[in-house]
Length: 295
Image 1 (cartoon, helix red, strand yellow):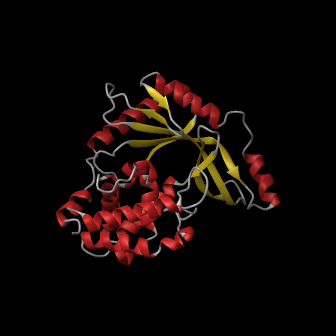
Image 2 (spheres, one colour):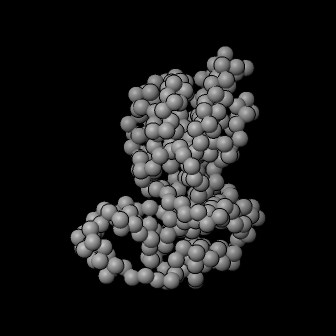
Image 3 (tube, helix red, strand yellow):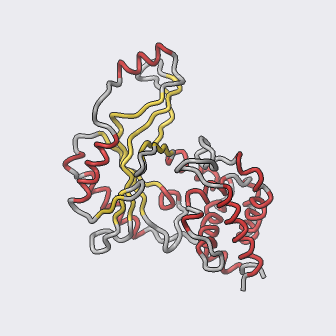
C-alpha cells in the first residue's frame, strides 16, 4: 500500500527554528567579537537546510559561513587584457589568504567552544555550552568570477565561496545563488517545492528506506528535486511527492544534464562537490520500494 497521507503530511513539516536560531546568534556574536578577526572585512551568514527552509526534525544542524571579503580570490580569464591590468591596479596581492584566515577562525572559536576539525568545516557539538544544536562553521574566502571590469565602480562578477577540504582540494560553492533560486522555485510551485524536499528527506532517513544519510546528502537531494518541472509539484502533497518520484525515475538516464540549484554547475560528476548517478538511482529505487511496500 502507498504511504498514508497523514505520514506524508507529518514528513513535510519544518523543524522548529528556535534552537537553531539561538545557536546562530551565539556563534555570530562569538565570531563578531573575536579579537583576531576584528580588523578583517568578513561576512557571516547561514547556509544549508536551515537557511533554505528545508530543515527537518532531528536534522537541524546550523551551517554558518564566515567569509573573508578582502583579500579575495579571483578568476579573470573572461576579462580583456586591459581589464586584467586595471583589476590588478586596484587589488594587490597579499600573503594573508584562506589558510591563515581559517587558522584565525579556529583559534577564535577554541577560546569559547570545544571544536573538532572536519573535512570541510569546523564542528561544534559541545552541548554543555550555550549552543543548543550542533553547528558546522565554514571558514571561506570570497571568490569572484569576473565577467567585466571597465572600472572599479563598474566591475561585474559572480560571487562564489572558496575553501579547501582536508586533502587540500579547492571547492567553490554558490550558497547565495542556491538560496535565491530555491525561494523562486518554492514561490512558483505555491510553496510545494520545499514541502516535497522535506518529505524526501524524512522518507530517506526512515528505517524502511535503508538509505545512509551519507549516500544522499541533503544538499544533493535538494538539487535533484530542483530539476523537476514546476508543474509536477502542483498537486495535493501525497500526489506531488509521488509525481516527483515518478518523474525522476523516468528521467534517470538524463541525470548527466542535471544542474545544481545554483544553476551554475552540474549536479553529477567527479570531485568532492559532485554526486554520483549510482547513488541517486539507488535512492530512487529505495524510495519507490518504500512507497509500494509501506505497512
